[in-house]
Image 1 (tube, rainbow, N blue to C red):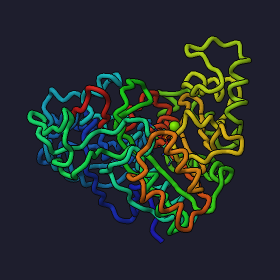
Image 2: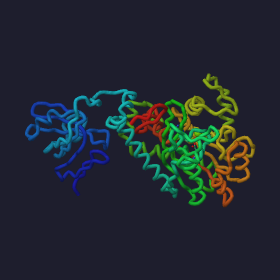
Image 3: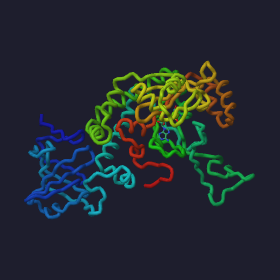
Image 4: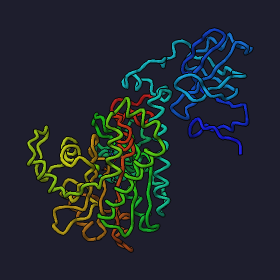
Length: 461
Ligand code: 4AD
Ligand code: MG
């Protein structure tokens, strides 16, 4: 067998074949007597490959003037590198210059701030940090599908255009074809019967309600797609467009729901540790010194599970001064969530059984009549990363709750049908994909883990 030379996961050469081809972008070039040393990166991994061009090449003059950002196709032979910092280098036999980047290219070799790079989000994937982040994003996407597929879940596509606000928080982006300069009105209100769908429509805030219909048909299912929220919160953890993973399991109660969510977080963490080691090393070095500990901590700890009531007691007893006061009946704020997971338990925490009044209509009422079978997973640095629940499967209870909340039952007939015909206990959760990425890379701003972030007053690119 010919010896295989592994440069990185994707780049693997047969040592017996003496010609290799690399197509990529110039990161740096320096000339020395008779030679040009060019660092080329093809995006497949963090490391560049060093290319040595000698002055016998026809286009050596042009090669010697190659600028950062220029695109090249190189063929040559692979040789063990005597230099420091790389094991292999390419001795070029031919360098095709595909395009020259002018000198005003913004990504010259120096460190740029995240804020600056956000203003050139179209170029930032060419930097080490963002290249690594988006390779991890890709690896995790695949791992999510693999996790579910290996466990018999079916992948379903839930609609993006919708007429129902699943979470009931009024954060639907409206979708309309009405002329905003001349909206047809009846009694001073927009007449949606004239609109494209004949009624009010928006972008989905969650695929859950549709996923439930499929869980009650196919068993265990999941969706993984974009969701939209017109939430006017300019924080480092909110974007208006984000991706959510939403499994929905039939014949499943809250305990099993928590088990699966915990298993999934551990699995995905393991995948990143195993498959993205080089990229993770970069984040551990330059972004979050604690990252490797965080990853170990997830893998080795059993997540703490406490009721909302216990959580509130812990927070009330703590001596910490919170910006938002906490007492029974109030929703936990990020500062409370972070205290529980970072300071108190020092590991991920699952908080369950929240008061019904701070949760959406679909959650199952507990026997105490005041809490619902909800669960949130809180992790260090981020706070809430997962929100889920057992669903109210009892038709009479669900209808009563919806009436209590003033919801129009006729709009939800299809949803209620699932409780009327063959209803079963079922549960699910939503994992925020960008929050997961923040957690596993140490990146502190959600705008830096999604290719083109959408936030209030910002829809560039
Ligand atoms: O807790 P949420 O609102 O739950 C639901 O949407 C349920 N329907 C899920 C289900 O049970 N199928 O959102 C779930 C997760 C949050 O825990 C958070 O990680 C993420 O989605 N998330 C956001 N991520 C980024 N930007 C935002 N504006 C987010 N809002 C929620
Ligand atoms: Mg939530």
